[in-house]
Image: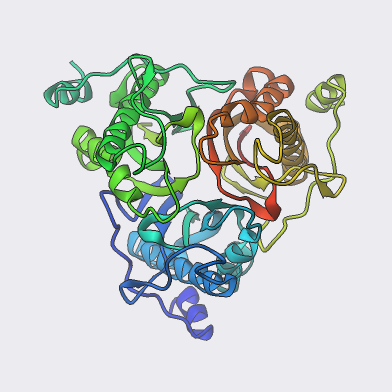
Length: 154
Length: 154
Length: 154
């Protein structure tokens, strides 16, 4: 078994089917050794786990769970693109957009749902640079969107 | 004639003059084989095609046309930077910000204006990763801003 | 003395201590010759220089000063990651998020606080691609967040 799939299994997780893009783009592009994964929404079993803004419509806790799901979706996309998640040498950057109201400042807590899971899965190689910001509204009224940049072993 | 300029011509399009940055940055930077193009606004003939938020001030259809114009402007910038658009090997990533109101979820439709045109122009090489998100307000009150990452042939 | 530290000194500036990430990520990741620096907030002496939105809570002038501070913080992070800022060959891209109200269009003025300082410090090598956009709310209610991409000498 692959070390990363094994690790996911140990964490009680498994890769979902890679979500289809919701529009005219592709899930991921490999440019030399950098894999750019498109912004992922918190789809689970084909539906968004939540919609609306944090914290009025979606609690911080629920949004954090959504961020974890975005990671699973992003990894499913990466696995499809690479054939094998063990080719990921490093999680380089995560961009996290949180749909929220004016005055909300807990985007880092929400984004930690993604960041902590990446480190649980990849260990030291999962430690990444990050930008987490608020957004007035996201596609399909999702509460969060996360994009990923991975470095691939040469 | 260059294949890409030929393709633009077939589509009834031509490159505008590359827009000047609206502030203290440069239109594009080439780092090894990656060309980073600054966020483009929907300038046409020196003026923004529209201002305000989608959909209250700018319809989805009008914003989609703006997204197409951002592509033409971004390609004009890339052509200036590279000397020759045929050096573009792949459109890697598109970042699309749509000025909108809370609850708006059709950023993907608007961003498709950019994504579909890139594929019409570049074919398979135009298929890219994408992040499309909403923004409370954009420079000069533009309804859309699009940035581009291209991979250049080695 | 290093040319870049010398230049900072000439400008009457010095590097602060590199801010600690406010959550579960790392300040910077080097992928081959690209250094990705996490989104920086305008911390100075351990506290945010301002909070709230531009221009209602924070003037454009104050936000511009905040953008300059984000550069100093980002350079402190880069210096920690690289050991030596003189290894920076080029500032490639700056992503600037400005917390603002609907209808605000002066994100470029605010972001110039970052862009102009980078050019004062690095000269021609400091000229970068940029995306500057508005955000409904940023981490800890900061008025600005800036992320950086540097190319490192080979």
